[in-house]
Image (cartoon, rainbow, N blue to C red; front, side, top):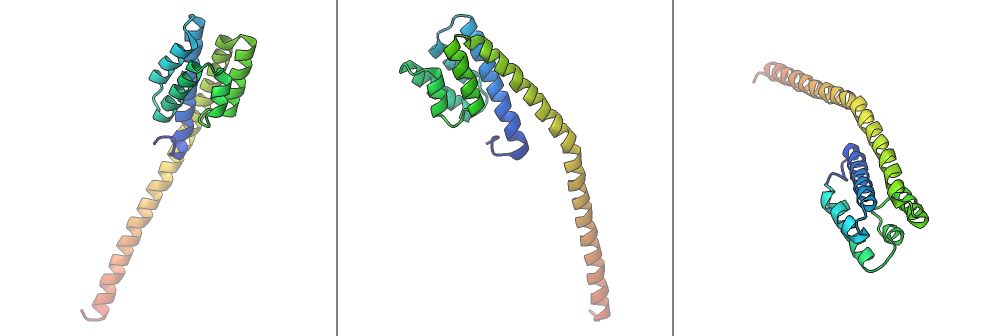
Length: 154
């Protein structure tokens, strides 16, 4: 649901992606098996679409597919995430790759929050102005309607 709303979708996507990479990096660094790490990642994700995608990754890894291949097969995962994790997996630096991605995603998230905070008052001002214009129009039309009725003798 939240991935459909224009301002919220970017925040939701970035939050879930950064949470996924952070948890995956910590678990891989702690020596947890990839399939178990992906199961935990799926559980911590707040968005159902990303949670389901992480569970599909778990199933793919259980089937002995590489993580990069499973990521690339699912359109939920952005190409930059797939590419970065593929490179990290091939070079044996998956933990560090996850943490670099997490840092980048969290910076993008913060920028998106700042942009939303910058635009939100402007949007609210426009909505309030439109509401005031509407009420003025209703008032003016009511006055003219009363005046027209008086002139017609009703």
